[in-house]
Length: 213
Image (tube, rainbow, N blue to C red; front, top):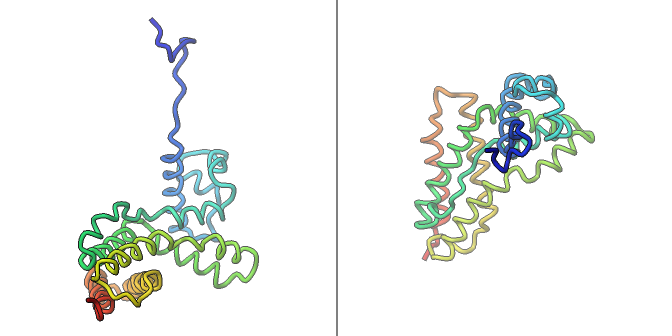
């Protein structure tokens, strides 16, 4: 007896998980961009890495620029459950900072890719550079929002001082994380990333708690 889903007797159509497919294309793109750099990478290279035709790649991304920007936004998998960082805000903020660093580290090739992104913005004073600048404005929204949320909870509970802006403080923390990652890339022998990031977290916590009730 035929099933209701197979009225013609032919093979069932394959259901494509578009989110999973998009993710796999971004991961393939990350490997190529990290290896070849933005300027030398072609869509054909990424399609070959992903094992798909160029047509499939263009179904998801209209151009190399669009793919590159999407990859910068989506390659890093940030923590999703903020509640585990807000139960005790002081320890939670320390743990969140370390978790964000871990998210960066698990995103293979992201640091090299980010340098490419900065290079386009800094060097190309044209429409291309402006596109990257305008479309990349939300790159830090998620990690900045996570940090600011924990700070706001801490302020509401009296653990953190009230006069500091949560978003600006989050920006400083992200700048510190990326600055330390740059130093580690330049001098991996003398910089232990986990230890220095933990130090950064302690400094920021001391700043936040300086006038706490």
